[in-house]
Amino acid sequence: MPPDVCQLPLVGGHPALDLANTLERGGSSPHDFLSDSSALLRWSVLAGVISDAEADQVGRAWGDEPAAAQAGLVAVRDIREGLYLVMLAVITDADGGTAGDPVAARAALVALHQRWSSAAARARFVLDPSRVRLAYGTVPAMLVPDRIAEAARDVMLNADLTRVRRCPVREGGCGWLFLDQSRNGSRRWCRMADCGNAVKARRLTERRRAARPPLG
Image (cartoon, rainbow, N blue to C red; front, top):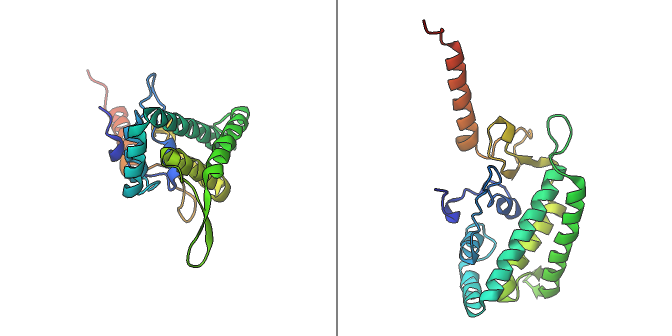
């Protein structure tokens, strides 16, 4: 049985990439950890997208208006899929190619811009002690998708996309996305303790089997 959404490790290095990792994309029946609006709310707190107090506000708003909860879930899933397509298009493999479809990525960018534009329209300027900032998520029912739309914008415009990696599926990895923040840019696995060690152990077993003398 897959773990609960709150047991998912945050390995992406950015909330938007951790969002992309909430859908298991391998196999014939991918598992969606954002199974409902409750799971989305719990994950949003875990990932630092919203605070506990904000989660209470959203929970009340969604409880009063279930349609808004469903709309929020649909919006977040749309952002997740669009961002994943864009990230695949910027990740280069060992041969210098990309794992994604540029045409699909361009269409996804249009949809992501629409989601962010709607979030920005609900944002407002806030005066902090030493600066003015744009606060996203001023409408409780749309707080989660608006914050996530801004997170997607932030990773696309401000992160070093040459450092985005995908845990290598062809080598036995899980396919999760992450920002390689190692000094020399050599990180290959989402987590060495998980996929990296699992692949190493499997390869060691295969080598040992190949080295065994034939029976009889």
